[in-house]
Length: 493
Image (cartoon, rainbow, N blue to C red; front, side, top):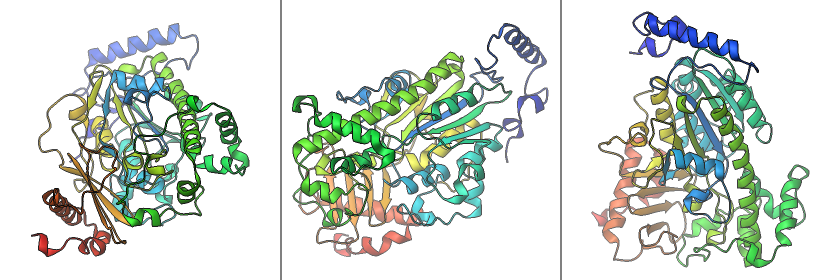
């Protein structure tokens, strides 16, 4: 049963939920603030202290892999805003998306459901959103918990989950330079209950147009990418980022990967893999760094506004990206693959005075698609359906022990599945002579060797096949059964 006192705004709560002395104190503070205010919107007035439900700021970028932040050890770009979140909060090192493509990943984050269960495995597929899922999407759950809600920026989901239909009071469509101002204006509003703001930035997704700039066909709206390409092309080699350590193409890479590199995409990864020389890949990486720095600057403006409004101690901030980008690893660009650069994303949480500063969690496996909704609802005091597979990260972020955390995390696309466990990554595909891959990420973090065919890791291979079978049953992943059965033979048992 829902606890009504967690949902009603403060002014509607009875004497048992807020003492009369506290009410007098809050009124006194409000009077002082009103008397001293010079600019009416210079500060927000939030009635709830840090010990109760926080404001929530959820910031998301598009196509930013986990290594594209300075605090992760990347010396080729500067991300002071995101670094500040990591410095003042917690950075989860093992955060994986439910699907490494925009639409399915975003649908999963908005619902807490694996996107394939809603019929979506890739961009362009039509989602089937049951009524119960629709009514318990992230925006509606937090709005029902008594929050003022805002969604700004890129959506790229299905009709049912478009912000005006999904529990957001205020919606702003800009996903670039104007988004910070829209978000800041909402944050600064006077209110008597907490806010939930989503700031969804498009970049560094514009890296998708780097190849168009390379061949002189950048669209009119991507002239800034064209300019970045010209600047990078004029630089000496030593001023461009080096090639990644895992630049080489694995000799035993499953054939399905190459066969799904669409030549018709705005980023023709297959063409780039064949035609790009080392300098072109380094130019590509330079452009990616600059686009990431640009969006970090926009994020920094919002974080500065939270600080200037005196809201740092009453605001939970969560940052992630919808998926990564291959960034020249294995001579690949774009997303949609189960390689780390495509499927692993940055994941930061800050709540000053509640989440200890400077933490790096490299133990717990996080599913951004499954875990964000229960985490934010936990802080908001919103009830979530008991059928969801995800778990709240609140206890981990706040330094409390958590029993029985997941053994593995799963990502999916239309032609394969990934199981990421403590040490290994197992992938299975629906076609090709080599349908499986097994990588020991402890010994081979760059995913350069497929150990599935050898005897040395036979037991681990069988174990991960069983994990996948367990996942199929637990999550009702019926779409995976046909091609998984082709590799999981009874002979292993």
